[in-house]
Image 1 (spheres, rainbow, N blue to C red):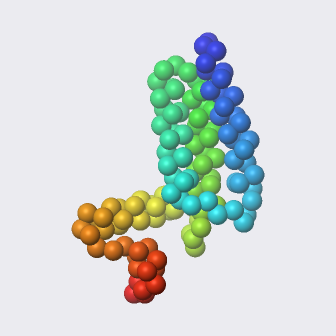
Image 2 (image 1 turned 90 degrees about the vertical axis):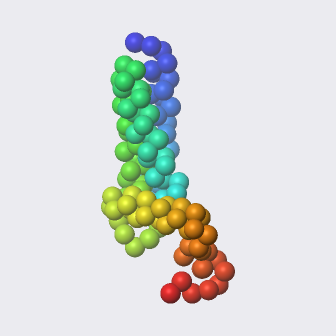
Length: 118
């Protein structure tokens, strides 16, 4: 066992401890633009550590990804709960990308300028 594996595990455990209050707080509203990338990075790290034989680090990163997925599912602003929030985020990101490429304003830009998005 590498000592680095235990250090990465310790960091992940601290992250899980620090994220637990957010998961428990029913009034928390964490933007999807923060939580979805964090969830994705945690999952990528878990897979990467697993392929390097760092089992403890992989387990810790999987735990962090799980905490972020709970935040994505149940602590994001908006009317919906559950994993569908990931799809909602992806659609919003795609809509913004298309608006940037085509030069057409997005719904967020209409709202910011005071115009109706209807």
